[in-house]
Length: 336
Image 1 (cartoon, rainbow, N blue to C red):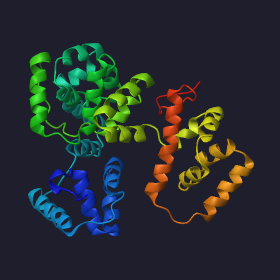
Image 2 (image 1 turned 180 degrees about the vertical axis):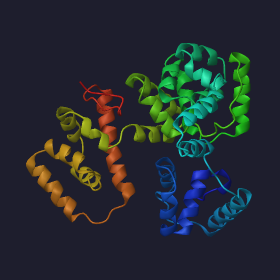
Image 3 (image 1 turned 120 degrees about the vertical axis):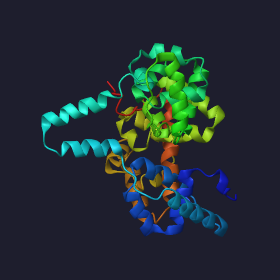
């Protein structure tokens, strides 16, 4: 299917630009990006086998225009300020200045939201549009957001989480409008620099702090609207490597439903920890056969390996829904 440049988001445009520039340039760019940015761009690179000439031209032209428009120096002012003050060496002066500067942000709407009881925040936002609620909650810490969502109706909650997942960047003007609306409700002044909010990683942070039942209900609601986004969230919530935390009995139930060829492909890039876990829960003969198949397995697409891994994770999640296994839930969940 032909790509429509006008409908591509920033990460997708960046992916096609880097594909045009080559592997060496891409590796240099990736060194300067965060893990989240690399993962986001890489997701759009997977499966691309051909970049049409007209699309390549549009991507490169867009980059040149953007480069001219945003020529200059980009910095993180807060980090720069903190590092510069810390380097002066006068501890008492540093603490005094930082306390004074940071106190300027007290009492502002989004900060006030962060200090309110979750039930009060939910009540304050219950009549707002889901997109407005999503923007507000995506500026909060994941734990606070998950607690606020717990006091919302199921359908509304799923809608809000889905919208958080779809947020990439928000313009200062939109943030200003939201803060002006909050100011009328809770008072205070507004902060102008909170643009980077939401996204899939934010949703994962939120969901890992919620009860599994509520998490599943939210994902089911999102799936009805956008199955692809729901799938992306699930893939980030539980990875193939996370399965090392499943107990042996649960692992054995999962592996009974996995074909040998799928398991072999999934183990192609798997770390030793998950390999050892799996080999502990199959027969010695089966383990030997898989090891032989792995040694004989030639180069394969990374996307095929990841597809095999996710197919096993899906089996595990289904068995969890049936109550047959207990899945790990990130660093927030401890099995006892």
